[in-house]
Amino acid sequence: LVCHSISALRCARSPFQLRQITSRWVSASPIRLKNRRGTFRLLLKSQTPLTTETGGKKVEDLVPIEPKTEKNTILRAKLKGKLCGLREIVAFQKVPEELDEVINQMRLHVIPSGTRIFQQGEAGDRMYIVETGSVDIFKESEDSDGKKEEVRVSSYLPGECVGHLSLLDARPRAASAIARKNSVLWSIDRKTLLDFMSKGSQAVAGTDPVSSEEEDECVLPREVLVVSDSTGESAVSAVKNTISQFSHCNDWEMCNIMTYRFVSTEKEMEHVVEQAKRTDAMIVFTLVNRNMNQFLQDTAIKNQVPIVDLYGPLISKFEEVFGTEISGTPGRRQKVDEDYMDIMDCIEYTRRMDDGVNPSEWHRADLIIVGPSRAGKTPLSFYLSLRGFKVANYPIVIGEEPPKELFEFKDRVVALTIAPERLAYIRGERMKQFGRLETRYASLAEIKDEMRQIERLYKHNPSWLILDTTNTGLEESAAEIFKKMDQRSGTTTPQATRARTLRAF
Image (tube, rainbow, N blue to C red):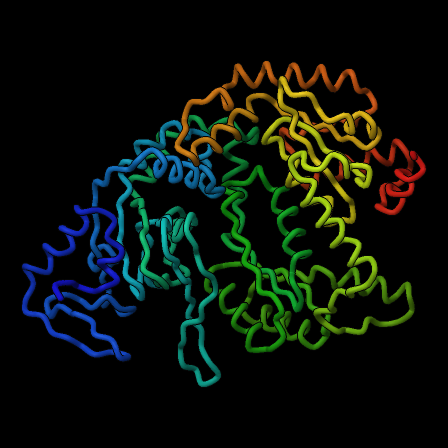
């Protein structure tokens, strides 16, 4: 029975951590057993219980910490990859080679289930990366009786970051974080982060052509709250596209989007407005129910919260032109009709044709995407399948003869190209996930030679559509394919594409 808690022991990841945990128990005052929900837990009278009530103490005071933990190659690669993926911290993306010194300063936290990691309203002095377990995010709200209660709004899983926004902008924590399971977290303190960003400022500077004076005049809100009585996907997409037009603004990438889906009650809307007022956020909404639409606008105006009705003007114009009003029914369900089943068939076909599998079935494909490894073939294939296209893809490997079917259906081939430097970075990050830092696969010199040979293959097949994916996302790549297909044959509907395919036989 010599243990602080069974969960703490299970979280111990090395003999050093186990000694660290047990050494604290030996020096503690006598122990007592407490029966809770039919199980026995061993508690120390001299220590604060590891529960959601921390009494103002920080998580560092409540759980075992190993300040100087030796990090193996795979763990270092994972931490570096996650830090580089933080869109809010541009310095991590621009100078990743300096991240080793940041990772050396990261601290390990072994956190039992139920521990409050930080409290809403307190100063943010540390950000966390979840290695194992999960962390729930709670926000305070008032019920109908005016009593405050905590509502779970999101969860963070392994590989995700918690608490980084408050660390950057020095504002109080916008929510509380509690470990849902026994968890292992890695943390960075504010000083380490700011020191690193200061060193990386020179590398980041100059990426924006706009003067510093203009940047200072333009600072986007910390949050945009999207409210919808349906999925909210179209509103989120519109907000993201709009925010991207403000890339000249100071810290534009730190603008966080929080989505409230299937909102249907006045209480939910009051909660959203309260959240927006507390965090100086902006509300963008798509509500087809006129009463709910008006209530949200009135509540926001009353609380002086900026608000945008995304679809209101569009709906009004349609009603004017059509001479009738909308039904106002939120959350209209997608019909499981012939078109829906056709898309499911496209997705299944694309799954089975991934990575060059089953060339004998390529005659059923609307499109065949080829290109070097890690150029984006599979994500683009599935994106197109969701839009009703049957897509096969094939990775071009130097020294390997492509299937003959690739040349039989040459009018359906989309050939991807990408800048060697970009491809080297993508492959390098992929290899780091496996703890392999230097490989021919990710070598820039090898990739340049590979791309030269691939481009020669493309030139020998002039009917293939060439698409550069160096700096384009899925939507832009798909749009470029549709544009080129329009120029070639006048239409890009899946049905028309399939009809052209059949005529080719």
